[in-house]
Image (cartoon, one colour):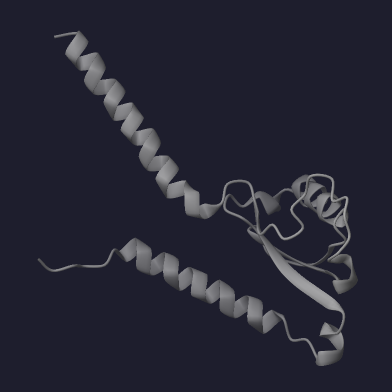
Length: 132
């Protein structure tokens, strides 16, 4: 049996590689720029950041942990920075200071879709057997 990779998975992998490259190219910092700072990118699998209110809410939440918005890459990615001295601070009020996703993590979308489809198919099969 010959394995033929999915075109969709190749496209997704190429898109992720392009995004990583773009993130690195946009992060041209000198050693002085990096001194005393840490950086992170928060992602949304649903393009949530096209909505200005969603961006404001995210920035307010991240500010509780000391993060400042640096730049919006697109509707899916925003870069933040904060002083390394904030690492030991407590009282983030229910926020994971190192969260990388808002909304559903894209790694869970596939399994959730498969599960929902399985439930729907099971429902159809059960309904069909009841109406024989």
